[in-house]
Image (cartoon, rainbow, N blue to C red):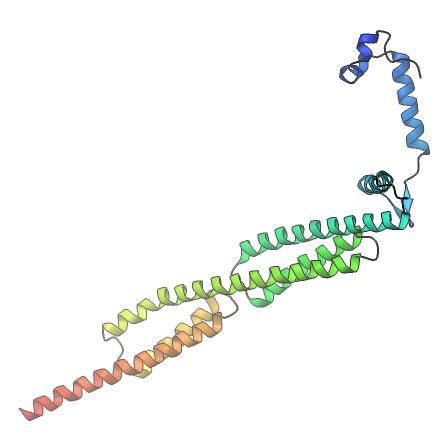
Length: 254
């Protein structure tokens, strides 16, 4: 190839000179060389696996490290090194994608039922596994695959605990807020019997089941809440009856 420039002082700063300021003959030769390389060079392969740029870099680095240490470069050792790097990278990227997708879906729907949470987890878990399987190479991929599944399982447990905690809090708040009307009617003596109170509590329970927050323990919490209100109602009417009996006794003694 001819010299890109005729002036020696400009050659010392060749990297800073725009392409259009170089000799046209040199630019044409550069383009011709580039076309030749792109048309003839085939993807590098090792163990029947096409190498990407990062893999090729790691392969060259492992050879250079071995030579610098006075050892003979080993293809098998270099391949193992590449496989471990690629599997590590594939695992990290897959887990990060899983966590980001899972967190976004969880934040939008929390609290949710356990079945809904498992469905979301399964969806993004399968996507992460597919991405890992596509990019991981070598025999060590099974090892990293197990690590990846363990990390996703741990993340699911954390989300499950948070979902249950949020569900319980929202369910208790919903119950207390919507039961206040019954409490007020009870204090105003608007129920003529325990049966009439219990009938309204049953209606309240049905309302909570249909309109209340949905979560892992929502039904159990609502049922326990209403059971406790049945007991409170029985105590209220027993105390009311006792007061009436006492008053009647006092009047009869007079």
